[in-house]
Length: 66
Image (tube, rainbow, N blue to C red):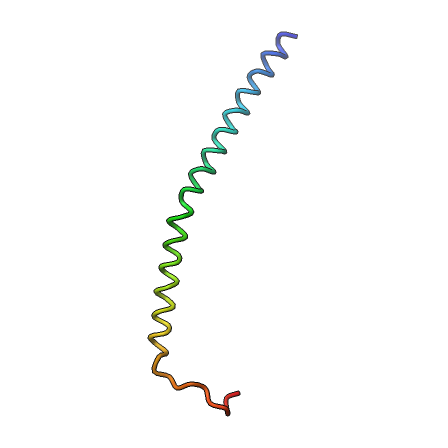
């Protein structure tokens, strides 16, 4: 019986360590989300500005294109 209690205690320790590592990994990933989102937003704005600038001189579509 004592063997089972020691085994259960060891298993609980390992599972606790795994939970700790998993929660630490989630915290690290969530702290990266804000800078990555900001970078993606800036990149999107730059691409949109380049697209608008490149097509600014084109005439609007006339009725024969519709």
